[in-house]
Image (cartoon, rainbow, N blue to C red; front, side, top):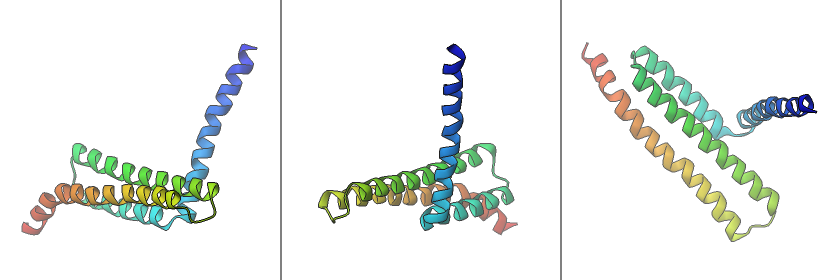
Length: 129
């Protein structure tokens, strides 16, 4: 019986990666904003390598990109649940969607500010050389 429980837990654990991957594929295929964030994030990481970012700066950058992608994914999840619960235009459904979109927007603004702070000095150095 103990082996069966472990197998079941292991199976559930492995399935969680499968489901997460399926969610990621859904986001890339169906959500233009998520794809936009991936493309911009990739370009920004390449620029950081070119500008020889320190480990600390690169870590901050990757955290910001990861948080942005995660908030975008949560926003999509909230939108899909709202759509599942009601097909009619309900004021509270609109609030839920608008507030989750606002979370993405707010962190996008913060991300741009953090990006400016991280890239300003290296770009100035590159232009002066």
